[in-house]
Image (cartoon, rainbow, N blue to C red; front, side, top):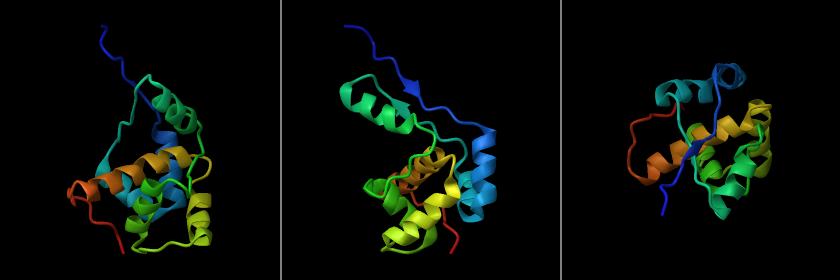
Length: 120
C-alpha cells in the first residue's frame, strides 16, 4: 500500500491583499492566523471538496463551518442570509481563500484554541 500524497489549495499575496482591503475585520484576523494550509486528500469526498475549494470564489451559506466562522468573526451568533451575502460579496473574487480562514476560525473554536480574538 502506497503512502497518501497530500495536495494543498494554493493562494498567495494577491488574494490575501484583496480580502484585507475589502474587509479590514477579516484582514486583521488573517494577519493573526498567518498562512493556512488546507489539505486535499485524493479520495471521493476530498475530490468533491477540491472541486469546490479549487474554485476561486466559493463561500457557501450551506457550509456550517463557514457560517459559524463568519458569525465568530463578526460577533453575530445568528447571521441572516442577507448579512452573509453582504460579507460574501466583499470577499469576491477570492471567496475560497476567505472560506479557508473562516473554516480555521471555526475549527479553532471547536478545539478550544481561542488564540485569535476577533475584532468586535
